[in-house]
Image 1 (cartoon, rainbow, N blue to C red):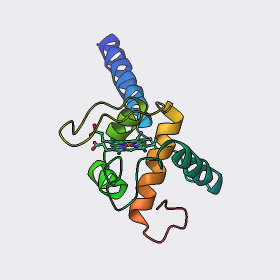
Image 2: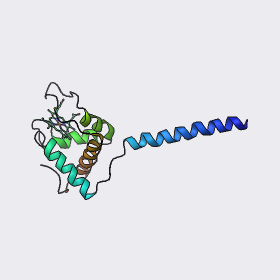
Image 3: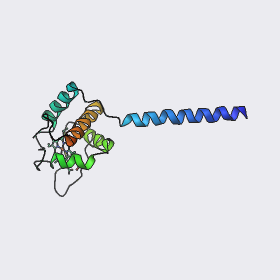
Length: 125
Ligand code: HEC
């Protein structure tokens, strides 16, 4: 009996730890001023050539893109790390330098913050 309780305890402990890890996977980095500047720089170099905030350009308007992914950071991170064709009828597939885990998570945190704060001074055009 005593032995069985131990086993249940161990199983619960591992379930708890794996939950923590799962939650961690989609936790976004803190937006310090340095992080914001870094995200804006990546956007300038890797995204601005094709995207404008409120109008379609070579790619669909960014505000609408981000609104669709809002609350689903993990899907947007996955997309930026390895874009797959989404609207083949309207657009060419997005060909970019695939972002790293850290870059993608930072980009998503920053883009979500821009969506929520229309007065952000670092919002791209
Ligand atoms: C070379 C041009 C180009 C660059 C650079 C580019 N994009 Fe795109 N983007 C596109 C195109 C084209 C699409 C539409 C792709 C499709 O429908 O398959 C797109 C679509 C998207 C979408 C919408 C995906 C969806 O589910 O509808 C998001 C979000 C996005 N881009 C973000 C970014 C970010 C962030 C960067 C910079 C890291 C970036 N893009 C850089 C061309 C580009």
